[in-house]
Length: 94
Image (cartoon, rainbow, N blue to C red; front, top):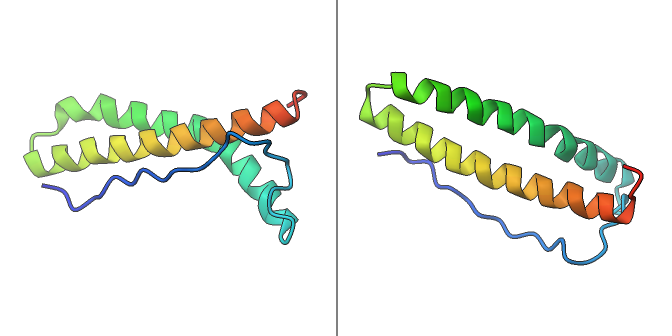
């Protein structure tokens, strides 16, 4: 059994999400916007690699860790996609 706890953070992207959503730290806003855009693809790559490796995993504990990791990455990817979609809605040119 794995010790990894799959977190399901809830972010509210229902309202308008401006590019500079953290006015006290605009550089952080820009950095996280870019990170969200990159993370969607990066996390999909990680998930694909782990899914490809799963049939080769013979240790049940390692297999459980891989499954939990995939669930965690799915949560990350979902939140990054929601964030990017909200920013694109505000800035359709993206």
